[in-house]
Length: 403
Image 1 (tube, rainbow, N blue to C red):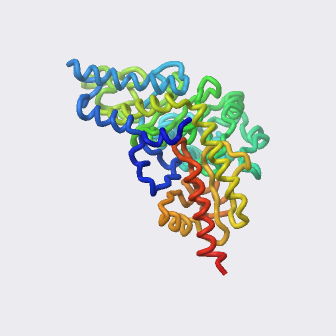
Image 2: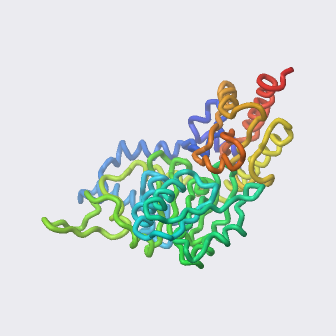
Image 3: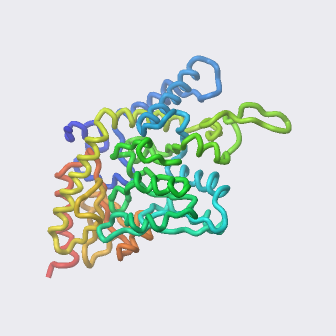
């Protein structure tokens, strides 16, 4: 993979002062995606699923073609398994509010992991509190990997929902989603996967781990903000209440009743984010052109290099497994708060995340209040990692160890 050639496809990366290492928050956009959105607004800006004139029909076809692209990207059975949303957070909240609220009852149990992003924790916490269910957490081992022995004990016949992130946005660990899916279904539970950090850099195949629902966001995988995906099996989607009623999700309306369009269109009331969908389609084209297997390998190897170099510094704590599994590396500098460290790096034009990363229970489990997080993508390179490592050493001299 020719990273230097790839970097030329991203206008923002032409700023050679900048080392952008916050890809878990959002990815940068290649010109292909930017041009696709511009082209839509310049030449295709017609509403979908409404008008019968030719340009509007062509825009509708382009919109629906992306639904098929998404289905192919995750190996779904059919395009009708794909619902477009605003992002992972909305997708997961839909499952919690419009499915779980109706199917989880007093005395039932919901199982999540301690590694969850708040978006895959708070909706289940609300369901548990509202319905009198119990929320249980799969712990992690010392290396940050999920404790499978504990999972086998926690997931029982009382479990109605198992919700699990595919990749930890703090530790970068890839959770055993296929094994956990089997445990969930063996016990009659519905299985929900948060793939927000997986979709950008790991091949996803729903035929292998059989989620009932899966969610991810476009903006983390080169696409625009405000567009996301909820995948669901037809069996699962048919059990969901409709989140909204209104334009274009209806088939017929009388003064006393209404009927809706079939799945998935009944879940997409109102004018959708057409430009976002078009941009997401272009992003998937770009990712497919490079190859998800290559992206996964590159991100993992680059993160391994960064983690290994950081671990050579006795003043640095690196969290998670020694063998990196994705492009995420969280760390701290002894004696220095993560926010102060991030501010120092900002002055060097090195952009990392500092805080609890919307995964506060996990960060507390690590014995800290905040970490620095460098999240690498396939357009990052060793030079950027070396700049970070060099700046960490300068920081130690400046703040902590200069005397």
